[in-house]
Image (cartoon, rainbow over all chains, first blue to last red; front, top):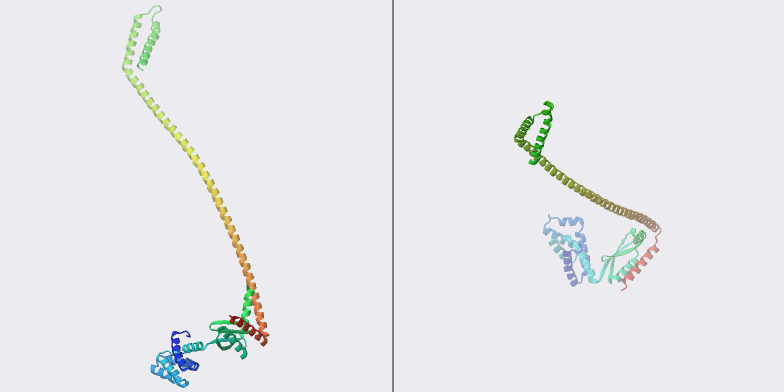
Length: 178
Length: 193
């Protein structure tokens, strides 16, 4: 969904407006809120039903954006998305928008999976190490997976940096097996 | 032929005349005979001979001629049959000689074919035996290799399981810190141009 061409077109249009308004990050947050609300199961099914008229669907999206307290451009964007019957694409639009914002601001997002809960300096150290490789500021998402036994696994833009004890043991087993 | 027949009749005539003379003389009283009677007998006998020769001669000649012709024909047929028999015997002998040669050739061919088949079968048996031996060696080597691999896999899995259990029991913060430092060193090495 992240790579959808339609979603990228909407995201590109929105980011041009946001750049002009200097609201790149603010709109990213608002867009994420809107996508999360529209993709909630109880709401997504009702918005997708063909029994719902276009006026009602557009009005519902407008009302939802208003209740979320979104800025005027994002409320308008929600209405446009509903009118174009692209509500199901909202999550992909949000992800594409975030990726474009990161690109524009020289940032990259990494998922760091630790064997046990890390301290802030540990997360910061790993993020800096990854940032030195990519030449970007790293925004980490931290996860904990005890099956790693020890160490950390980092995923950055499709690349895996594996420093876990489980993988070391697996490599040792493979070497022993010949 | 005619001369022989005439000589025969003349001899018969003389013999009859000479042999009948003592008989006639015996019927006469001793010391007396009649040359007239002898002459009459001779004339009589000559007439008899003439009649016999006149009327029986052609039949006798024809009889002997037919018989001669028959004998000649028979002789000719016998000769022809003999010649044919001789030819047949020659052909048969030649055929027998040919059959003997053919038999010898067949025997020779059979011997050669048998020798060839024996060699071929021997070579095939040798090849099959070598292949079976090679297959058996390969199979044995594969089984041994597989067994070694299985044992090594099991040992490695057991060692890994034991190591995992030991780490789970006694893994400390200091260990995690060392791992993270090692990981950061690797990232730093990768970041170097």
